[in-house]
Image (cartoon, rainbow, N blue to C red; front, side):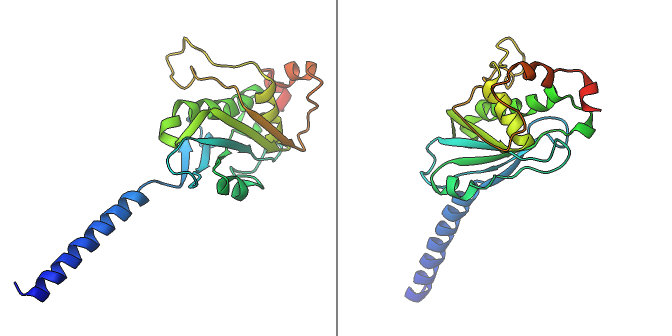
Length: 198
């Protein structure tokens, strides 16, 4: 092999190695859609913060508004700012009233997202001790219910996700149509009687 041929071969090897390293780095999905339950709406979108490498990130879950009738997972108005500052953002999806889910079940969809993230903290590169929520309108209802409700973790459950805590570090609300000081309303609001939805 000529000297020039050898140099070309070395260049090809270097380029292949660089390509392989680049592909390895790009295998991580920076945005994912994750199904956390059997219903098609029981899914969330996660945007991974690139700042800070693989160190566990705090995570913010945004619940969208729409009167429990419409809408879809989104990161909320501060998604870009949070990602730039090393916070992973999740757009939480949940069942709607027309899916015949009770209000309690809709609230528990929000809790299930918190528990699912906590159970899979290593997979998602998140810090299970730094989970916050927020939301607008009906999404704010879910966020405030999570903040005010007792931990729903069931340590005896055969489901590893259900064994996780639903407790939060932070809650931010916008236009939530409940008054957090009227706690007596929460009993009725999160009851399992389906007539509340009809």
